[in-house]
Length: 419
Image (tube, rainbow, N blue to C red):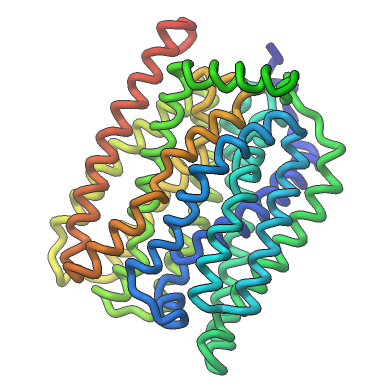
């Protein structure tokens, strides 16, 4: 096992984290753009909350067919280059939607881009894991979180600024300007990432060897391994919570009467800006404790209390107080989502099969139902739908705490290394 002093943050690492983070920010900004540009998409495409939620559901449905093949690609080929391949494919569809910003084109875009996203998603998290020794997995994901946060602020602030300017011409022109900002950033990340990929040092075995029969055997071992399922449902609950708090964006406009630009800026810094602080701190703490699952579990306990506070707040609560609460939620939420894939160490998932495990995880994505479900609640119950969203969120937090506790206990029992 490598000594943790071997891991040094040099220029190549910094460039890799920044470029990969920019690419990650671009993909998430594009494929999940409703989380920041919710009202802009509703107004431009002239659709309902439920229809907008269905776009995200399409990612999950596509993933049912492509997630495991995408994970196999990430394991069988150099994951660093698969990242660039997937990013290039998604940016092609980003340009298509930017050129023809209609709901029907959006349906085709979200469905087709999901194929490239499956391979990219498995490869990007595997890459961040293998470019650092196991003892530094928390720091690796934490620093990657900084790159993601910086990239997200750049592309989203640029997108919001362009939207405010070009929407005066037409709503479709405003939406297209956001997409072209994503396309430009994604192209830079793709080309830069490809040039850098060949120079990065990796730790341990990162590609699974053998032909089709060997791949099927590896997949069988992955499915039978209890650690896979701890990882799958641990990631599910962490991501599900992040989806839930994203609904503070429409909450600000619908309930508090703020502007689209204001709620968008709050969303950008809640989801991404705070990650500059939360991701590295969470990573350092996780490495110190020897377990990022412990850090996330403690965070979830605090988040449960905060969600209860949100539910009982009076309607006349001052806006600054609400912003503070949302930012605290964002601080802990962004830390959890940044460290999400690092719980592979606590789940005892082998690095060479990490892509397949991520592929299996994608089959149980909250994207399959959660946005559409939340949209239905808001369409049917109006602002009262937010009560159902917060109750659902509390249930997810409880499940997350339980799974993470069992995961830590299992690793302690099998290894005897956690204290």
